[in-house]
Image (tube, rainbow, N blue to C red):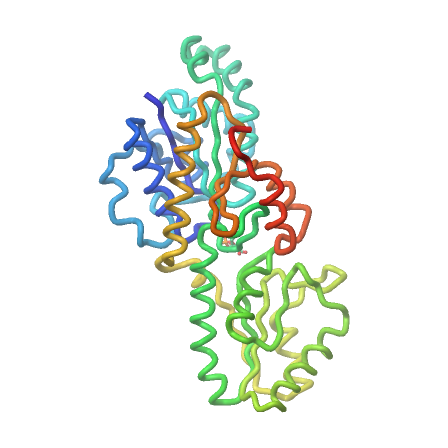
Amino acid sequence: RRAFAVLTSGGDSQGMNAAVRAIVRVALYNYCDAYAIYEGYVGLVNGGSFIKKMGWGDVSGILSQGGTVIGTARCAEFRDYPGRLKAALNLLERGINNLIVIGGDGSLTGADLFKREWPQYLKDLLQQKAISEELAQRLSYINIVGLVGSIDNDLCGTDNTIGADTALKRIVESIDSISSTAASHQRSFVLEVMGRNCGYLALMAAIASGADWTFIPEQPHGDDWRVAMCDELKRNRERGRRMSLVIMAEGARDRSGTPITAEQVKQAIDSTLHHDTRITVLGHVQRGGAPTVYDRVLGTVCGARAVQYLLHNAGQVRPVVMGVSGSKYITIPLMESIALTQSVPVAIKSKEFARAVELRGPG
Ligand code: F6P
């Protein structure tokens, strides 16, 4: 009987629960065992009650909930070999060698390393007599599938990550609320949204709300950003606009790499245009609340496809990520997409990459 385990790791995102539910239920539907690993890699390293065998009813009622009901955490122990060795033993003891990780690029990189080191874990555990020869042979490899759970939409190779659509909805709703009060008082607002390295949320929110100006990490401004921004805000006011809106990603920076802060933006508007300017930092509101239809469907389909991928491809397969390109669900190689993510501005390359590397079978 095959056994599948799922964990959520890194920052939570809306739609993770839909994915967990689909993974558990598609595994059970196919007469496999399904395990949920609670609190991300912390649970994987610590085992015991952190790793729970799941029944059909254990994932009832979670589809519409934000966050992740199986918890997530940052785990220092998993960064070191002894921690990962403990994690491997926890899976081996339960007969699990199919692991589905829902998280961002850091969590997925950890999963890839875990797979590469698996033969060494077996050797060490055999030497310690912690496992039998028979078990080591039966579970001689581990298969990994990644699902990208991140509100930032920051992984190359997939058009959308699970949670980004909901976060965007939350942001645009907030902007709509701010706009009416801003226009009433003819104020300017500087709105900071999440996105340390990726400006997707800021850029899409700016387009969807008709903002006057935006700062994103992918397109750093030159020294003259204050002049250029204030000119634009002034021009728009002269056209009859009663408010001004600047949306900035938290990772906004200038061309020298120096962060541009909301306070600096406010000061520039105050001193040049003498507007009554306010700052709103949306923070974790963006990561909360019920997932949109899109994120529920994305989480569900990617979760189901992850289990199906492992069921249909017998034996060892290289780590992949379940993603989406246009209206098509795709399977892409995990490490290539992470390497590209870390080397190029996401907004520019993701679509081309998806087309170039799409897998048609096991890698
Ligand atoms: O990676 C998702 C994200 O929401 C980023 O946009 C943000 O910078 C970060 O997580 C915040 O993380 P934390 O909740 O750990 O402060």
